[in-house]
Image 1 (cartoon, protein in one colour):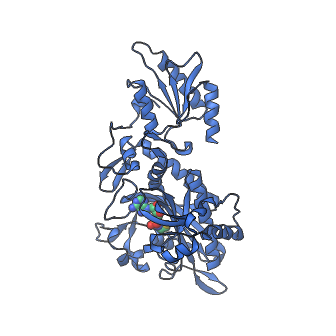
Image 2 (image 1 turned 90 degrees about the vertical axis):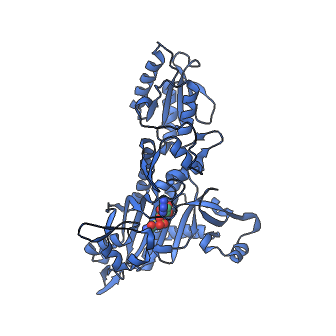
Length: 441
Ligand code: 5CA
């Protein structure tokens, strides 16, 4: 890709309306553009990153046996009246009337819709468990949308739903998602801690928020620092191993604000391990039994009886994750963004020093570009007239993990190569490709 032909509208300075670093950076490098309060367009750079995150989330859902579907954004109020949430959900629900005067709404979440889909087809306990998920836009008419895409009104979410015969099986499903979340956030190079949380308008009595630590986060958290040492590595997908995994985490006090109990915190956590800080909620899982299946009559036949299925739901804020990763990885003092290579908007940039009436460096850049393309390395060539050092700054800001400089310091077939944040080295293009490919593994 040639930089001159991309749609990457970069701003000279941080926009004054943004108060947290992710919002500043996303506007500064043209990842998003606000269209109205809390509603954004995703421009190529931002969209690329979000799609890569989405794919990692998807792969980890598939690994636990969940099946992907797509549900509409617009729903009928009928099913929400059946569950009893139409009135309860309040003003966050955007209500719409169609030309037939039917009451519709823009889905803030999909428990009702998925229960309706489930009950229309699944009749026997032999078809259980069912784990279904979708990745879709949701809308919540937040009173105070803020911090860019971190708390917005229209946002992109992975939401999954589980259906089981009884409590025990349902907890097994819950624990599968628990593990899949740990794996997902690890692949995104985030340390997300599962914290006991309130269930709010989704309901139920068992819930964990997955929170990453960040000063700019909106969730207050109280935790035992030792929880950071727990590992989910090599956990098998059977009932026993998964329940052991959850126990390993639950041994340590870790709660969000609403669940905080000062006495318990002080009793359970020795002083030196107490951590009271802020975090960003990137995922949230719930177990709510028959809260929806009972009023909506979603049941299966089991031993001659109808049993209401036991359900859970499991969300990941895919669009919020873009901002959360920036909060975790952006060094705003030096203006360097460190995307993990798995989700970086481009993997490598080529920065030729362009002299007037001399295209030789640009020609070399094209050759290198084609070579890297052949190796499946997603590369961008900066063919603009900007000066060399501002080009380097620009790619540091965007967060392209590798840079190849074709300038005074390159000699013959060796080019100046930088892994952002490390010393520059002069290397052949073959060696450069090897390093990048290795990093991608
Ligand atoms: N159906 C349930 C299952 S998880 C649900 O909707 N849960 S939720 O309300 O907790 O949302 C799931 C995730 O979506 C949150 O953890 C958060 O990462 C993301 N999210 C929620 N509200 C917003 C918002 N206003 N802006 C951006 N992301 C949001």
